[in-house]
Image (tube, rainbow, N blue to C red):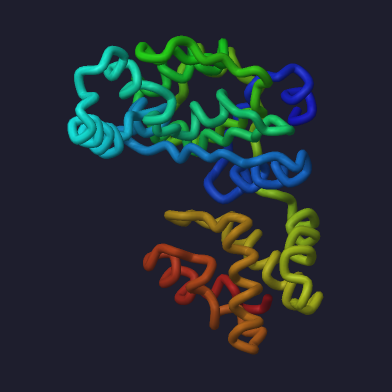
Length: 260
């Protein structure tokens, strides 16, 4: 699906549980393409000024004071100069659209489900035309469209209009065999025994009714913590994989890791 997204120049919407590797996929894609990764982290209340552009009011004020000192404050064209590209603060979305990179960048719009409906609606036009109109400057269109990945942890349902503009891929937790391969690559210094036991334990924990199920990142952190502690006792580094106190206590009292 990723290769098809690149071929069609359409955004790819990645949905899945937190920690399954959605963000990591964008990082790996940027490395493979030898492209710049531009990340927009969404959050509640994010607006255009934080995502697209804003004006550098401090620099504009300094420029006005300089003109006052030199006596050029009333020169024709001063107002136009104040709202030129020189004073434009580029945020991630504008940076991705208006770029001169030899290879188009990878734009990661991370956790779009954290943003509100208004911001999601704003993205609809942007992802359709890959252009933006700045009243003081004009319309800026992408010469070469960036590769766009949009991620969602599905904390809320996204609008159908946004989904129609994207290709879609659900990412699930990896199989134990696949996670074993990932762990062997990311923590090569870990013994086969530790790698196997950690993967077996993580698979078991994900089957439990936890507040926060461990992701791939926690699997890697668990193996790294065991190496740092110089032990193969899984419970010694349980803090690295379970991040909610109630989950940790349940794991200890229920003896889920006994016998692994």
